[in-house]
Length: 90
Image (tube, rainbow, N blue to C red; front, top):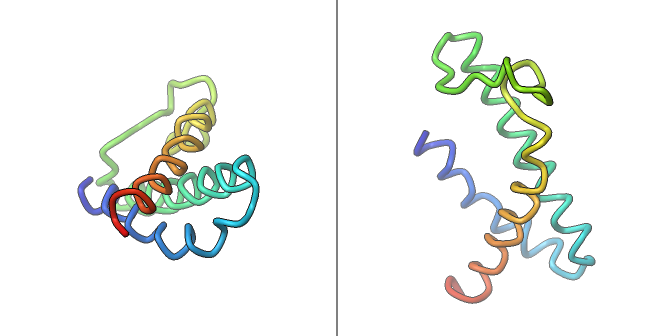
């Protein structure tokens, strides 16, 4: 899991590239990127039978590897990474 959460470091070039866009667009892009990575890695790990999470029973789950009801969390999490980038990392 550390590897997966550590991939947030790859948001840095994206942050720099989209910083001039409106905040709702940026949050949406971060959310989609996080969902995409979680889905792809989740499906790969599911095939290898090493996926540490299973959302199959959740109402808004997609193939048991992502939950669409987490969208607001990922939206704001991306903006939090952006805030941290410009206020603590530079």
